Length: 190
Image (cartoon, rainbow, N blue to C red; front, side):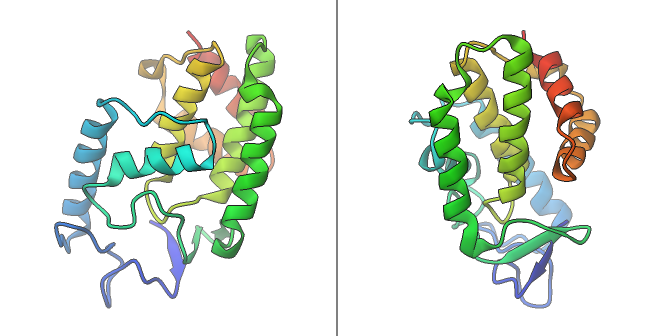
């Protein structure tokens, strides 16, 4: 659950996000969101240039049935356990910088697995810190990252992913230590 300031995304006097089915119970919304985003992830994903627009298109694809704002950067300030994510007024600039670096680094192509894992951990850590969307960041990050890894010649075996290990590595990377995230990524390369 996110902490948000002046949150226009939730129902009045509630922490439940406004959604297309008008579900007001958090557990029901969570179940529906997980089911539909999982189903959408099995469909062909949007093609693109591995840029921020492409990233937003992936979010839209996964969450188009749940939220009217799917694929659009958030406008509210959010944090998790008191740790703020990028302020919404800086999302576009920070994303342009991050995806510009990704392009300048040839989308992490032609790297050995160790260097790929190190650079990929940095990219994923920064992408997480931006947290472009009000909800669905983790699933979008992982889906987009799998596309990026595949494009770079390091396809991931997501069936090997330990969600708790990944979450802990992402938290450590948010605190500035990307080593565990690099190890997790390297372990996923097939």
